[in-house]
Image (cartoon, rainbow, N blue to C red):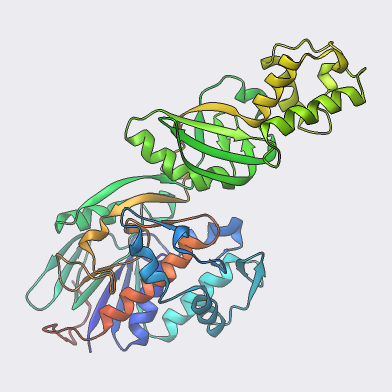
Length: 420
């Protein structure tokens, strides 16, 4: 019976172990934390949005854009939903976002753990892997207190995002020791830090709108939804969706600007016309109250101040220039992005093991035969909304199936996985 060692007990590692064991392999799962699947518990605000009905190539990012979609296509959202249903997790659909019916991330984790146990997967926690040594017949995996021997190895050690859950970047070192190239690893699905002392005054405000990221006069990404304003800058799902692009531009030492549009259903001309009509409807209103009921008061106060308008001035006395300034701030609120929040606050990373060194069908290393990869450790990241977990399921399934299968010249050994 072939032995497969899976390094990393996150979503992709558990899926890889379950798949390999289902294919008949003897599997050991190694996790450096005191329990497996910690990161799953924090996904979807504790409810675990484990996939999304909407699946398109643009939902996944990589320096090799076609790479992730080839894997996701073979194990798509439908198969993910069916897989979890077979484990007892009935799902519900919220506008395409798929959650367990119980709204508990722990249900997903418990189902995976029960399946690992049912299949006889040996789970070893508190085991930190320090080196992978390829041999003529087997791999030797050096850990802090044991040597693990296996015919195949699947490296699923995660990225650097949320290191408290176990993703501390140590898997990158293991891959680099074996000659794999790396795409710079940077925070993604993360908050953006912006220049401007005024942010402290509008911290806590939430407003629907559109955020776009610009550099060298070019818009590189945009998204729409609820924008959250904070003392350090901007947050919220649309900010997360564009953050990987800002992160990469900042790494390249380029100037980055975020443009916030708080009235995205209107053009600039329509916004000006709307404000003029609003002023004529209640001309006696003071400027301090002019935008009340339309935008959050903290935003209204900021825009009035930035427009150089006296708070006491009557709405009916606002000039075309003043209304134009207000419309410009509402539609084109520009802030310089100075950084991202840390890896601790990032949901995932962009970058990772260069996929040019990986077989796009099996996720086997093109440098070290018998070594496979899955999950966030690869240069693949998805949009917010269940896509990163879908990548974990799809890549874990692909790597697990390939690692357990036949490959020309591969050794099949019944040697015990663990030895002192």
